[in-house]
Length: 318
Image 1: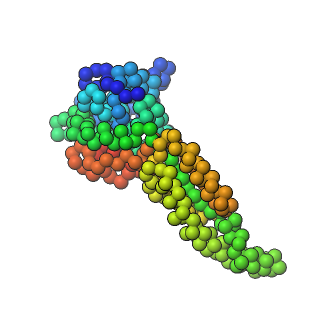
Image 2: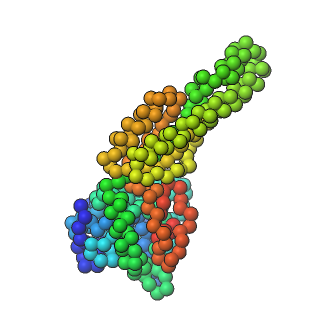
Image 3: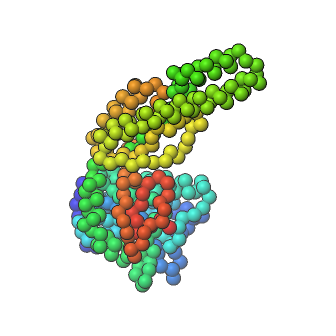
């Protein structure tokens, strides 16, 4: 799937998929003629070759239907999937931001499906003109400076995907063997409504304590077993918490595409061994959580990455 780009400079011109709507007029972010353009960066990917380099921008659009193109330093080197935009971050109502993030992820996924390896950016990563250099000149310079590092990282990620695993415990199910919880439930059955309310609070505390003890016992074993069937593992915070559950672990896994079923089997074993376990198994996705590469243009460190994955620093979130 890898090859060499068509044009000598590795940057096919903008293309729009047939039948694909253009930018939303209410979100017209075209820079005025006198204002230099920035580049919104979706992902870095291996040089996909001439035919694919024309196919990807021609069949996939970006935020608000923006035409995409590839920017590269030299044939055969890593390229960036971008669109031209005003040098300001995308901001708007929550509904618009959610749509933009979906459109961003769709473009990244298309690049990943095409090449089998990407270094995905988080939402709102811009390269701006600076010090008399255009955004494209800065991006090309950064790609040239980090050519070997980027090539090696893309080689490492080829054929890999990110999975996210959340393991929790249903508190009521986790406390079935708790003598204190069983005793409180028996007392509640024979008590007045007022006393039952007091006992219900004690029961919730007993279930919480029992589930936390069980979670502590399960954590190390589950993490070890997942580490064995993955090539990298990163702890994560759960985005949404169920008030009736206790966390065991939440991790991102980097796995080979042909290893996804193995992860599923390990999770099924964990589920079978403990009926109170609840498992959320998400993916496969491009490896957002495993894309960190250090400094970028200008030698600047990135600002804190938005939830959901890592960015390639320097091509920093706006």
